[in-house]
Length: 65
Length: 310
Ligand code: SF4
Ligand SMILES: [Zn+2]
Ligand SMILES: [Zn+2]
Image 1 (cartoon, each protein chain N blue to C red):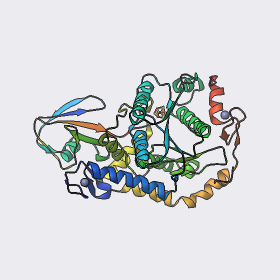
Image 2: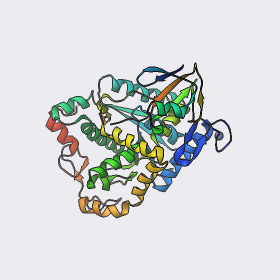
Image 3: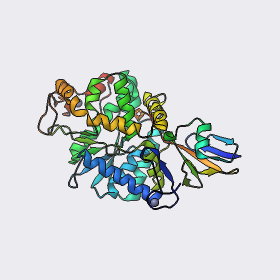
Image 4: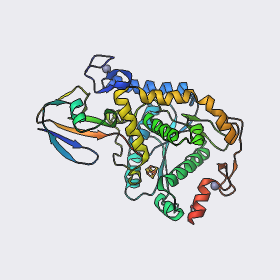
């Protein structure tokens, strides 16, 4: 399972792996312009492959006000 | 994905430009985009002293970092809005950045002046964000005039501006449309020039820059921003952008290109705007700021709320 944590809310979920970052965002219904995805302190491009046992962080980038 | 420039592993892909970059090449790309915005819209020159408004968020800290890297003389200004908890944490981020880089930061505290934004909003029965906007405009300009800065720079990015444009068009806010531009020229000696050097960078690019350069910014959202319409506009534009890469950029820059046609609307409203003309501006008899009205918006707000700055 891939562990996915939202850095802003602290919420954590797990998803089936492996899959690409692009697939992960689709599955979570997130648009690419709204988040960055990180693994081991590195930003990932949309084609990066997430393996089972990976821990990734979602960093929301859209702010309001 | 590989970096389009040097072939190393890419850390960010930018669909709008059909490209991807490694860390170092991305930083170069960001600097180039900002340099281009500064030149294209004639924001300022090497000689100008710049006041950067830093909230502690990713955009304003990234902006400060970029302008310093590009060799501009710029100092920071942080307004502590007096929003419980959130403001202290934001202030810390701004102060820590300044300490780390050894650069000058002025902090103005609304709490210390007896006019924290939530209290002003409550007493004047106005929405927090509108009160906040009035307070920011007032103190940014005041601090710039006091410090002898030629230019005030804010961290508004492409998503901010495209969302604002969409909102203004949805409601056909002619007056706001006429005023929306990456450079607001100075008005006599009352209003300093205001610029938005990040207007060619998306919010995602700005966040990536902050992360890749090790800037510690506040991730937490202002509690007043809950349900903000701007977030919905940004979301709508990002959905469009997903299937039409570059849509945000052409929406915004196309508008700016066509602005001259709108300036007539501006002139009809306020008289000509420019270096030499004060238009229909005058001084506020309460605080001396530039204003279309007397008292100015800020003083009207504080008078109505019964809270006058100390
Ligand atoms: S969300 Fe509203 S109150 Fe909070 S900082 Fe932004 S404009 Fe000010
Ligand atoms: Zn590279
Ligand atoms: Zn006034």
